[in-house]
Length: 187
Image (cartoon, rainbow, N blue to C red; front, top):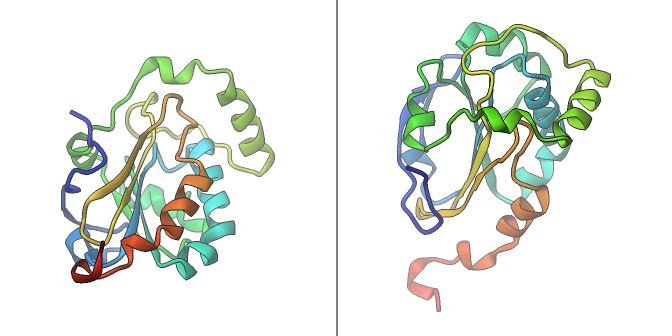
């Protein structure tokens, strides 16, 4: 089962790879970008995190709280993703429980898209290369934009192992002022 726009986002409480508690319910009243990634040493995922880090200040200024989930154990997130100095919570889910709840799955066909090669080359050129794989090789990323009421504004399931929601859709989510209005004044 996949999550659809307009649906209440499934809540959860998990620990970040640094051991701090992350409770999705605690983010009510704020815009949230919940991203599901592959394993912690995945060059494609590390490239995406790097691109997000370049834009993080604008997300923060727009009031978007970012949460990331990886299919790796905490020590591998620390070793690979953590070295980028990520300012937002990163959750370890090696049991794939949250992936199952949100309908994020591996798909062998996701590895066969030609655009994956270009992204892989770009990731390698930025220094993201490792063969340490935790979990399913063919996990396809997904992103969920969640409004202040906890409702999914957009559910984006990638087709390829390199797919994530385009940044312009996140920018549109940030700019949607009706999401910031208290319920009593919403038209």
